Image 1 (cartoon, rainbow, N blue to C red):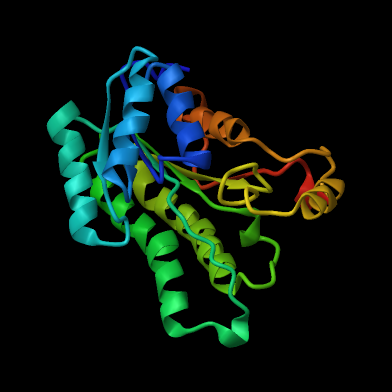
Image 2: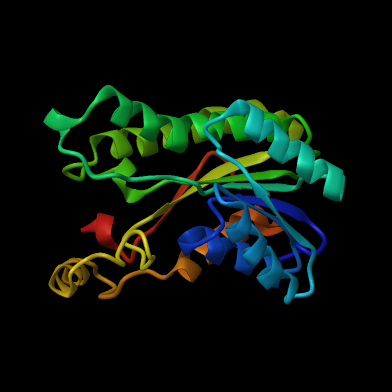
Length: 246
């Protein structure tokens, strides 16, 4: 995939989909900056990635805060001298009925899920060279509705719109911007606390008849981050086992 010696940042990289993405990039020879809100967790993942024979560091970052995002990019440049790939994976999805949703509930989800992508993409675009790749993790919640997740669905729909517009602005610089929209993925956050009966009901509604794994999303990200996707920009790749085509 021609990712050897490339440098990637993966936000929300300490577990679940983010961890899967970081591991997949490392296996392709990519040096990785693991970013999340807990420094120790970032360091643990970075050590795991080094076993793939690549360089890796952890940098604590609250992606909803500009000063911390700027420090993340500066730390990456100090360590590696370049940034080739940005994977915006960090996100939250607290279930709240719409009528009980507070302004702070709304703002927190928008700040972590959408404002963060503005901050990280802008800071990264300033240092990326031609051939850079920005890959955002959206969700099928951007195209179908989920009760209790009005703020989350809105934030992911915003990502899709942003991908298209930003792709146009960065195309002259040969920086590609795309998104991957996962369906139901087996992660500690998404399915770890779910009752087995509920899991089986969800699986019954997925044409592929299984939950997706972090690797399924990671494989799509690796492709979009590679030279094989040089002519793809402004797109949202849905990876959901066929859920949204029914």
